[in-house]
Amino acid sequence: MTETQAQTIVTRNDEDRRYEVHVDEVLAGFTVFRIDAKGRLHFPHTEVDPAFRGRGLAQIVVSEAMADVARRGETVVPHCPVVVKYLRTHDVPGLIVEWPDQPHPE
Image (cartoon, rainbow, N blue to C red; front, side, top):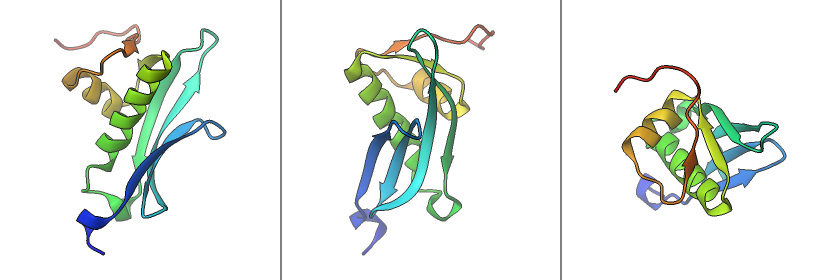
């Protein structure tokens, strides 16, 4: 099976508090979230297994995670550089983003 035929699925794993991307049922990467006292989802870290790098999986898992959070009506607080970059370059309809209290370049 070629890379283009590989099945890529993103799921939310509430037990481990992360969104996972699987390629042909193998865990290839994830983006972690933690829930604060206000119910906001803080995204501090995204990781892709070195064996799966170069396939755009970090962007896929973050994209699907943000879309799912928007559908659920939850709020995102981005900390992870991958999540920050994604949110600065993509519009996610209905997503509520609360930027951390730190200066951001314009």
